[in-house]
Length: 271
Image (cartoon, rainbow, N blue to C red; front, top):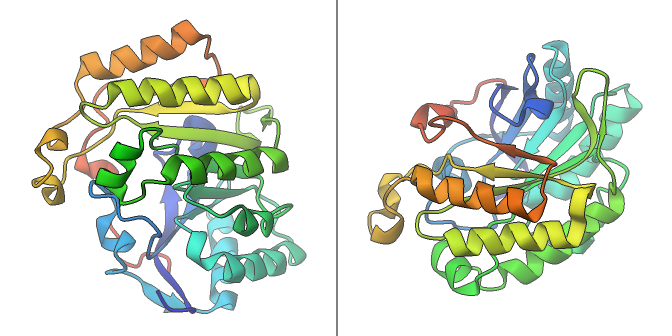
């Protein structure tokens, strides 16, 4: 990606966790490019940098306020890691101009702690993935055998910055951490290890979002073991395990969330 910001979509998004989207929606800004290459990526076009428009830092500031005008509950920065320096400048400008809604950092967790430290005091809510513990899975599906080591350090830094979850009177999150875990087909054992690690390490300081929305897209045809949806038995097994561990601060998905309609159009809306 270039050093100039590339954004594929900036719009209200209704399908984040309830305390993020609420009824009005989350003000999502989808940045193009990603520092992982997950073979099952649901946002493949933007992750590979094939969609998006170059914009200035000042334009990003304008977008923040346009989303606020649309009654967004927050500003939600999606796959922002490689643009953190520019985003920091934009957030500092926006906050000096009166931006007063929470800022959400929506990440794969494949982050350097030095990068996250630049965001200290600017990000209110961290919304990180925690994809794997098993290095064989992380290498095969994300070409990142060191994923767990990197992500665990990143989450530690996020927790240092926002150690407690805070909600307003309407149940909307004002600060804190929601860790997302997307269950992959056939990877239930690793999913349980992820949940155990998160709960043993952070207890009720964080929320854990257990997701069943994995959608097999055409690019996973060469990975036949994950070229299917997660079964109800697999999902229920992981959720039941979390409950047995004692997890109470969490989110689960009911019904069929594995629909392509949950994947937004990256058509430049709002950019």
